[in-house]
Length: 163
Image 1 (cartoon, helix red, strand yellow):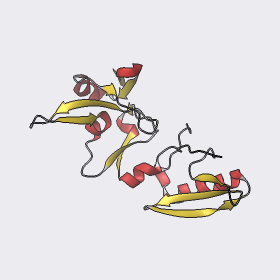
Image 2 (cartoon, one colour; image 1 turned 60 degrees about the vertical axis):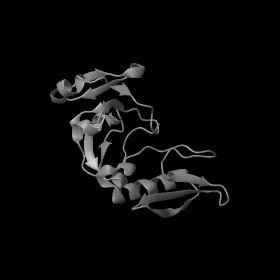
Image 3 (cartoon, one colour; image 1 turned 180 degrees about the vertical axis):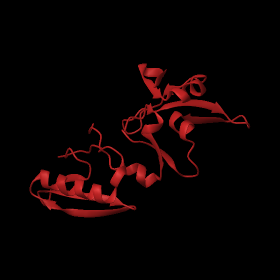
Image 4 (cartoon, helix red, strand yellow; image 1 turned 45 degrees about the vertical axis):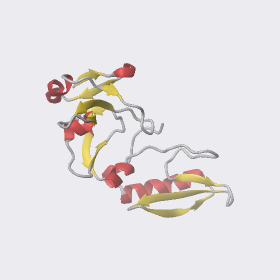
């Protein structure tokens, strides 16, 4: 494992066998996307136009509309054992909870329903929201969501620290 220095005082971690090919370029920490930083660089195409390249995509080279997922949720950990090529849907399954206004849960897919005065659990599968139930206790809603994640998402289920 080796490190490549980026802007903002950050570093990207890569495998030893990728380091030499990547280190010849000037990489920087791109603007955070949903709280994640990624190592990126500018490149010129043959026609002279600029192209924005992400380090993880450079390493894995996904085809077509496939994307590269960071298994541990760290966009700067670009070691091959932490990267996998997935569909856009699979990549969203491995995402952290986004915060919203009002009462919020610590768990993605669990929210307080102000009119019904209860916790609701839901999960999105194949672009469809599935209601998992309404619960008086937040822990019960979280348990329902986690059971559904294991069932629907399997290995693509996010298991990192909630930020």
